[in-house]
Amino acid sequence: MILDDYMIATDVNSEVLCLGYPIYNSSLNDLPNKSKLLVNTINQYSYCISEEDATFKEALLNSDVILPDGVGIVFASKWLNDVKVKKIAGADFHEFQLKRLNSINGSCFYLGASNETLGKIETRLKKEYPNVKFGSYSPPYKPSFTEEDNVKMIQEVNNFSPDVLFVGMTAPKQEKWSYAHKGELEAKIICSIGAVFDFYAGTVERPNKIWQDLGLEWLGRLFKEPKRMWRRYIYYGGIFAKHMVKAKFNRL
Image (cartoon, rainbow, N blue to C red; front, top):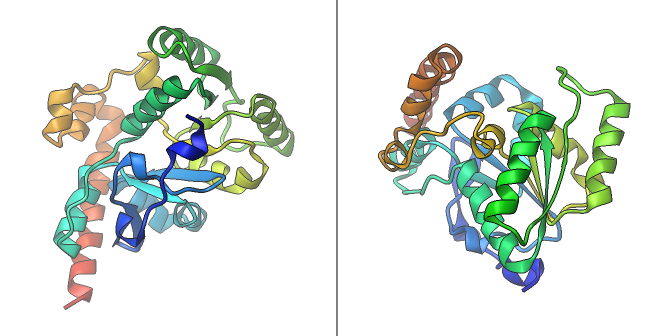
């Protein structure tokens, strides 16, 4: 089964408008049928950052698919629209794609992280998904890339020409980069999945399935890394709540 045969076109009911963003609300088996698909995720933190960063907001709004990666977005959809959406984390999308690629002898490319992390990803990938062809490149670690950096990154991806390109350079950097260079990248699916690189490599432990099923994965991450995560979940949690209340009252 080839990639284009696997993907099924969606209808208008596959999205729900939440806080100004068209949130994907369907099965991952029903992704849009496009020659090149740009996939991003949104959660309460990225939503708040997008309200402060116009370029980031433009990148998200121009995604082909925006996955609801967080209980905040799930709650907002229910509270504001009375529409239930299912959380789809970047890690869930990553696992789904690897299983699919393994079944079709497909290929994936990891752009981001350190060479050490990429090496751990490759080792695990070859063990769990032996039919998937693997490629990777570790870009320079810096706040912004030069034109030479961008050319090199695009060349590395295009020389491999993957079915799926995973981009992991933290938000909002990864989303803005993917959007800016979508037209130059030779990949059928381009998705920004950030922390998933570390989760899959084992350099950062993802909260276990109990936390995930309870909708408390964020709390598990907060317990594990309080100094790094408190601002994302506590401070921006309050900001996100204000945005929801404002949106609710604007409809009255």
